[in-house]
Length: 147
Image 1 (cartoon, rainbow, N blue to C red):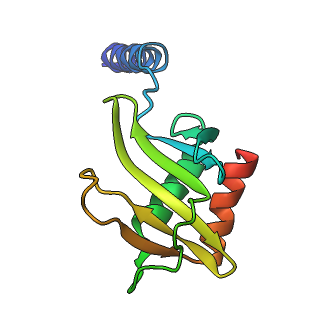
Image 2: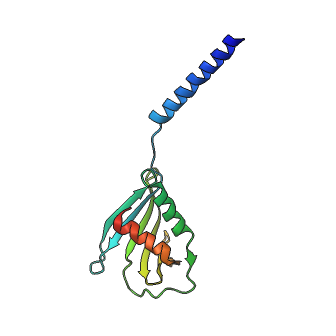
Image 3: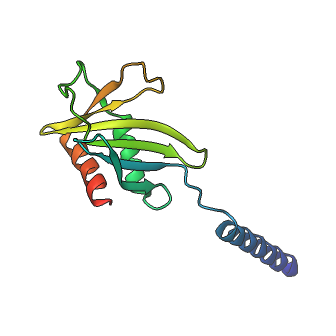
C-alpha cells in the first residue's frame, strides 16, 4: 500500500514538473494591448511617437489607460477646443491581431482635459469625453516620462 502511495506522489510530481516546464519555456508572452502616445506639432500637425506601452512590459499602466479611456464621462456639449490641434494622439492597438482598436485625440486644460474618440468612419462626428485632473495628470506622465 505504501509503495502505491509513493508511486502516485512521484508520478504527480513528475506530471506537475513537466507542465510547469512547458508553461515556462514553451508559452510565449503575446502582446495583446499596446498604447502609443504621439505628440502633435502645433505648427505642422505632424506627429512623433512619444511613448509606447505594452501589456507584457507595463501591465499596470496599460490597465490604467484602458480604464481611463473606456470609463470617461461624455461631455454634454462640444468642448471649446476650436481648431486647436490635440496635445496627443493616443492609439490603442492589438499587435497580436494587427489591428488598431481605438484612436483618441487628447486636449489638456487647467481642469483636466477632454478627449475625442474618432469613429472608424471619418465622416461621423467624434464623441467627446472629459478627463478629471487626476486622469489628465496620469496621461501626461505616461506621455512625457514614458513610465
